Length: 329
Image (cartoon, rainbow, N blue to C red; front, side):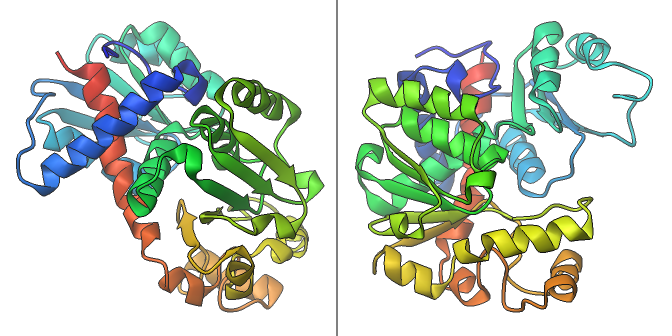
């Protein structure tokens, strides 16, 4: 399968067969690295990394993946570049496209990464936008394959919490593509937008995926994996934090919920996680809400499920697969 020259902007830009191919490549590249037989396929390639939103996993995953494969990268943030200040996204794309072989973007609206791809003339990779998080999905699905040894069509993934965000959108659509039993459990006011639900339903009608979107916690029963993400973001007013926590506390991943899911359930989180008060935001959450021992996931559950860190590592192997398949000579 030849994906050279393609951009990686959102899941639905790819066929089911192409998506499955990227999963296969990620698994192979991971095995090659572990066994010391990795072959460098990006020698001489240069990639620009645009980060309008900060990151730990995405930045490190792209940088290590590029270096492992013999390429080079240049990091650009919103402070040290003219992007969005003196230079439009379209103009930035036309400049960087003449200097780099590929461009990664992590930032705000999907329109920004789509504009980069329209004007750059080189492959563009979505490291996260407000709407979609496709590189995270390959890592998540690779993790589920590793921990079950089963085809994804035989796996039940249940996401709990705020389901209006990019992670929930991407889980729903990519799960539908891979014929999964995909369930989103959230209050009605925090469920995915209607257009996202329609897209997933259309895919599921062809793939045979089973989709459930509900506010009923009982739907967690029988899950192979439960998944959550943070409930609040920096910059949101304090009153939104307390309101959000009140709405979502019934959807917290704690031991009681895992007992309802089943004894062999595994836990996923795209990180960072507010599982304790050892961070600036963690302390603020405790101060505002009085809740200790974790917010969207409790500390005891977080520490008992190391698959979360397998998932984090797999960001690098998955991003490497995307880069290799779309930039190799």
